[in-house]
Image 1 (tube, rainbow, N blue to C red):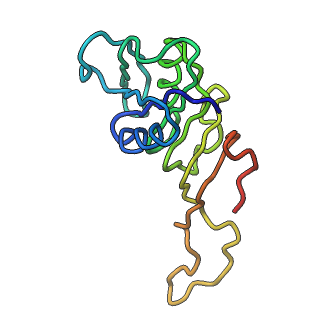
Image 2 (cartoon, rainbow, N blue to C red; image 1 turned 90 degrees about the vertical axis):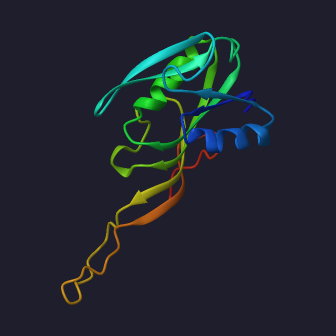
Length: 163
């Protein structure tokens, strides 16, 4: 995919991003909360379910035309990933894909990422055909199963998600 930048969103994106960057021969760029990076930064504000936040990146961390992958630990509404995409694109990078370790089922899909592919490693799912009777008042169907490797339009895995 020609990725030259892996951008990790603070803070758990820092656990996964550097390893991925090393494995594919790309540089790692941290996207941090305000006032944590020394030197000149550019920032992107965004709205959360419970308020506002901001991501910052060093000026010059990415060059125009570089291809980037954004890594975070969890995607819920997609607000943080969307801000990361906007920040990188303002610096001239082309965001190729986003990847998260956990994705919440309630908001799956493109998560408002402006059409950017999203790869999710683990996604909770709910049983669809749960018709077994309860035993001693205890439901016998599990609602905490996981889907591993869910991909929503990912060039890394272009097939649709299967259960």
